[in-house]
Image (tube, rainbow, N blue to C red; front, side, top):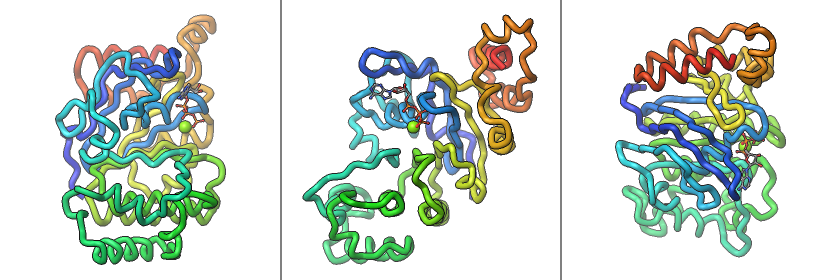
Length: 293
Ligand SMILES: Nc1ncnc2c1ncn2[C@@H]1O[C@H](COP(=O)(O)OP(=O)(O)OP(=O)(O)O)[C@@H](O)[C@H]1O
Ligand SMILES: [Mg+2]
């Protein structure tokens, strides 16, 4: 797969809040076309919030910074426009819409999109082919959206949307619980098919490192308390698996109190962050990261 260095998604100093409470505090993230990034972090760190803010969820207000996608600012764009621009978010808790059959939902989602505005029969054929690829019983397409779906079935539905819409960048927000072996398999298969059939980028938000085993991960970001506190290559996943997030959760105050005896920062991560973005602000942040760790 060709990987380019120009960021497809560029998030700069993003701060956001919900119901008046600040959640994200100056988040920076750059994802190149075709790349696979992973965001990890303890519960409540703000990972899902980041996904929702990127998609323009009106529950969150943007307090600072900006998001560029494909060279364009996303400011003021509705979630639908962002989706049509090529962004996709699989929700940690997918919606249930009684009365709306899956097939109608997919039809509405695809309407007006290049290459997807197919005639009824062709559209059904396309969706059925994708369902088969995911080993999904076609009868699900006639069921009400999400209603009574098991965790694995919801996952299949999400993967079906992913394969149908072929976004330029997909953010997959994973539930850590409730994903049994079957659902994990569905996800892996969906991701494989997505990578095979498009040159799309992937941001995987997960606690479940098993899903990452088959992925060629370019970059790992660790989020704690609404900040990216460490970055590194795929080896960071194994480290988090072995040691958890404890050492990332130390605040600068903790480090000062302990006489500066903070564990070594991942030199590679901080260094790579500097290399990826050589701006003074980024170098400052990298230095702060080192201090925090
Ligand atoms: N719509 C909202 N309204 C109020 N508070 C919110 C909202 N969304 C998120 N929060 C709060 O923001 C914080 C971060 O939540 P978020 O769901 O982004 O964390 P997370 O990193 O995805 O956690 P997890 O790993 O458990 O999924 C939490 O304290 C949460 O309660
Ligand atoms: Mg979450």
